[in-house]
Amino acid sequence: MDDSNELTARATFGAGCFWGVEAAFRQLPGVADALAGYEGGTTEHPTYRDVCTHRTGHAEVVEVTYDPARISYEQLLETFWSMHDPTTRDRQGPDVGSQYRSVIFYHTPEQQAAAEASKAAADASGRFRRPIVTQIVPAQSFYRAEDYHQRYFEKNGIACHIS
Image (cartoon, rainbow, N blue to C red):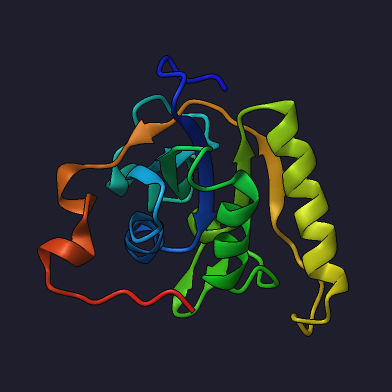
């Protein structure tokens, strides 16, 4: 674990607009926190407006802090696969652009191996009609999104249901 608190670990996922992704991960027992943010680009400290220009290279992501004794990384991966369509490149539903790409940012070699194995299993399962295009890349700098993006569903009374 690369967190300063040995009882928690971090996982970072991009699965389209971060509002629903954050809300879904927050519902899981064992998840201590989930933050909306940006990762995978070249601009330091990007804003939402910067990311929407498609010039920074960032994805909208959620950084999940979790207790591995209560929920495994593999369980987080299963939730990730179930919450979006990992077969569409740079698109989730009506949201189009590279910031909405399907991506897993791994923090440890163990997370990389688990993500690659999980992707291969999901691809082979027949659950998806097309090949999975999810990127699996090393974690980079995570930039917390603006406050109005944090807990967006909760603040606006929008229900989130994990499928």
